[in-house]
Length: 211
Image 1 (spheres, one colour):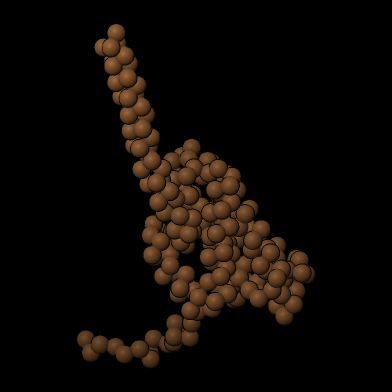
Image 2: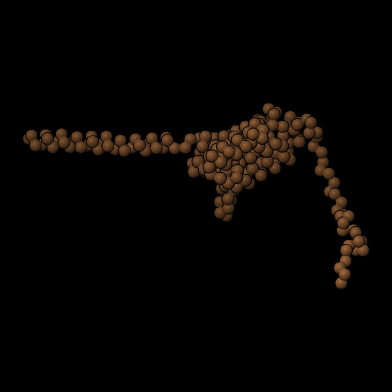
């Protein structure tokens, strides 16, 4: 009888030890997952992906260079990467793409396009850039799925599509197009191609060999 009680007690102790050991073995995994790179690292990687780099340090250097040139350009670039990465994360895009910064560089370029092409100091430009960063993230998902059929990378195709649309349509909106830029003037006539003056020189003016 005492042997049976002892066996039961030992059995419970081993079972509790296995449970506590299992919980202890699970805790480091949770801590390691929490200790991984954060959202800011993903954003900086998105900025670095503009120059095809997967490095948060490279993104920080690139953002610092833009801030040195003009703090507004740096703010648009980093803000665009934040919006693109955050939108992709909220919509449930594959985590490996978010971690690598592949969901941030198109929005970064789109925000910079709005800042350079339009007036970076206007509120309408900032609002348009924010909306465009969200839209380009959705466009990027569509382009990635479409080009995946032919095993082709999307690269900056989403940015090119949306930036082209903004460039063409912006002059039609009075509250978006800068007033000092004037109206949407038609493109100038193509220049007349003529031979350059040096081509029309007489052959007599060119030095000839003694032979």
